[in-house]
Image (cartoon, rainbow, N blue to C red):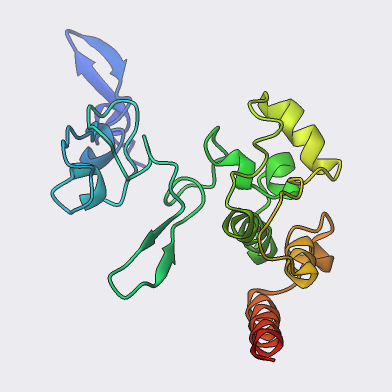
Length: 210
């Protein structure tokens, strides 16, 4: 039985000594090894931004000014020319990572174990609904907090406190409560949110027309 040459199977003969060949290919694709950043001066709104071109959010490495692509942006939505509101992702694009900027919108189970599901999205949707309804930032009354302290409060059932609102509709808050329920099984679906909100709007219009 012929023994294969040792210098062709993970070893290399150099100056009469054997050396381990640790790898023959790059440790990662060039796209990962290359540090992508931008220096936009117009808010990172188009594909001219090197970060947006590869579907990444701007980071502190970028030298851009007034970024609307993550770094400097607190905006959750953008109103288009047709007056339709387009909601963006909560968190980092393509990553299941809870960061300081996105943890306030993360469901209790996500904060505890990074366990994601559609019900986690509904929880985040409930917080967005609350911000739209009360025109205020969620948890502004207790932030800033360390991640562990914030997680303890949310897992313990703490939710944004009700603010004054020009239009009082208890059913809207009820829908929000169902969205951000601590028990995942108690949360309503996105389609049910739509139906319930449509019913509230219809009832409000009928009431104000009489």
